[in-house]
Length: 587
Image (cartoon, rainbow, N blue to C red; front, top):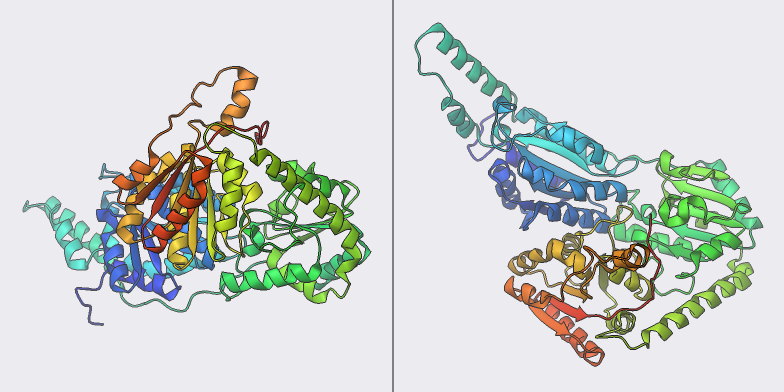
């Protein structure tokens, strides 16, 4: 085979990415990984460089959640990799298929004090599903192909591949690099050393170009048995007060279909079943504004239910470790993870399978009339409406600056039908979750069970790239905004017109709500009413300041207009204090 000088390890990486349907590579540039970035651009992939490596993985995570295609991030060695750890762990707990490519020093110099040398795998392994080091060019393609399959199969999650610099650059450059280390002596020791160096380089490139990117490997996941489906249908037939809880895992792609297509099929299945439904995580928005979706008083409903179906939902802190579930109810749990399936509970019918696939099969086999649960649904709906009434009453209370509940009630009225809502914060974002209603499936993004702050800019970046026509709203607390507001530079440079709202109350309010009354000291919870709008402007975006409730409608519409004009905009909203979420700390 004739090898062109333009061919190098980076081109093999880019070819594998393209073969797997990857459209974007998120990165913060470093010399170790430059061949990957240059080759990816030449291959037609969009290379998006950001201001902090953690954003690369958050953005890749968003792409994976919204499309079903694994998101890809490429970072340089050492600090480049270490800066991604929080986002990697977040993706692991959110079960997002992400492929992280990390650079590394030359294979011969590892452990010898090379620049940015670190044992990446020792650091990364606990936080990823699978990790490998590639130390020969010929292994790039098979290892990356396996990485994509591992990221998506079974319980999806992030994977890590280390690619040392001497298997990425063109062979002539690598040989020149190693020549700099050759001995200039004439003796046997010098000749042996130089022979060893040449042999090492020869091994890096042996058979390098014999295999190119092929067809992606099949993705496997656990499937339900017919017997389990029959038992579930029988339980449904007997139920008088069923409750369905759908979590993020139910939105994972389980076939070759794209994630949006499967989400639409799942939406139809849940509506056909007609069971009062609570949604969490990525499942928020699955039912749009359908009255089947119950948004409040979930714990009370679960205590009264006689059948509970947990579809891709573990019994972790969000379900009070299982204590929120009625002991008298028949419990059906469906989960890809054997561990999560029985976490803190003992289901009457544990089904290790893909939750979305199971719900579609359950709806297909269900021939009952959901109207039989009409009185049960009405009871839950009355509670739902009563809670909305309580929220509306609190929203009418006067506060210093803008009442946050009143703001979100106004925002709820003007958010576009084609929109993605992203939450990155504590108290302000939690308040939003009670009021804002995602318009459609795959239109809400939050970190998930890890409770991470700082995901917002990466999520917004990924979402807007995947859905360029959608209105993307990033809801920041003023604490969380500090983590990633520098990415307004990224939004500006790459033409990503998102709308960010910072709820500025000069406080880490989620913590202060409990710390001050319980411990009597606000230490470390106090911030300043910072000019976040000015920060956004400094990075090339647009900034708006809102301090009065009467200005909210006009500023929201102005923000929409600026975004439609192609400009990223930040609305700095000064908010007042309410008791809406008093005593809401989670453990």
